[in-house]
Image (tube, rainbow, N blue to C red; front, top):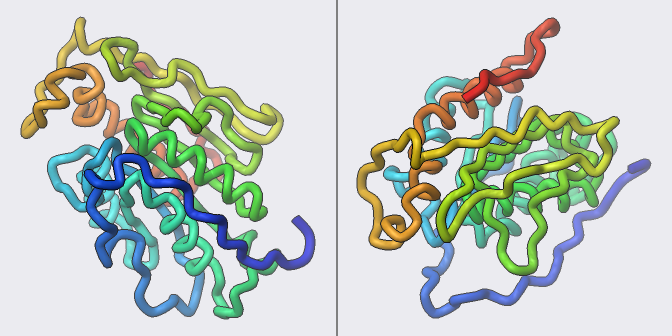
Length: 254
């Protein structure tokens, strides 16, 4: 996108299950003083279902905390509820807007080093956020989907052309199961690292602190707490937060 792009505030989508969803907390997507420089990396994650962004029992929250401890403070790492995708979008714009003029220049967009990940509805939210960033001309280094489940009006299969690399982990069983295949809108610009299938009926994983709903969808719940999946996600994220000139992005077979 040439020249400068002004921020556009999209209209709010209708809230489903409004009576059952708590209001956003101040910490969810809130940004304090704007930084004087663009963060070295921006890592945005989304939890699934109605999970809170700071619930330490859940895989995406635990993963974000490990990454936060491992990398310097100039990396911005935050988890959002999947219904707060717009807050995540606005946060990214603020972080990239180095001179705080509410306009993203070509230079500011080019400095973006963004990684998006999520589980279930959160994985679908990550793809939708990548698509919104694409419309703003902002590149994304990596998207990670873990047992991606789309809402009725969403589409989580096609990865937009602003994404450099994307990977998909899924399991095929139960009422809720992941998107089995992602594809690139433009294969010349996006590398699909793989669609990796996990079968928890053959190799179950023990999860702690599951809700009654997760007992109805045990394989989907196990995809969230599976340490093998999150270890692979961590390897991929580390590769991009600490780029090696000769490294080839790859993940081991499950």
